[in-house]
Length: 156
Image: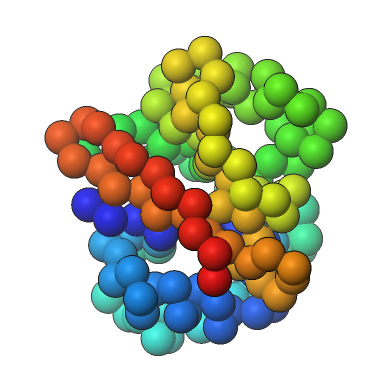
């Protein structure tokens, strides 16, 4: 199973579209701040399964603040990160605790616009960076098979 992870597109869907065309994922996970961009993805890729959470800039949305997704034996915790204090909790202890409480193997977050990949207390922490316009736009690819996963950070 191949998954593209995006966050913080902020009204610029073109980078996500390019990455999806390149990667050809089975699933897309979107971590907020660009909910309106999801309509462009759904229009361009109507058969693509997309899971999304709300960001701090997604006003009037019906998206949830967090989502737990299970894919091929891997439990994925999805949040934008602003409610986990990811900009201020540099060791990401709050995010790690939330993910552990949810029984997650991997915690996905955005909000900082900076790519991040680390492990804390048995939980992989992954921020794909900002998929929008910026100095270093990026995304992540998760490959999952039989309960194991591998994550790569990529530039757009």
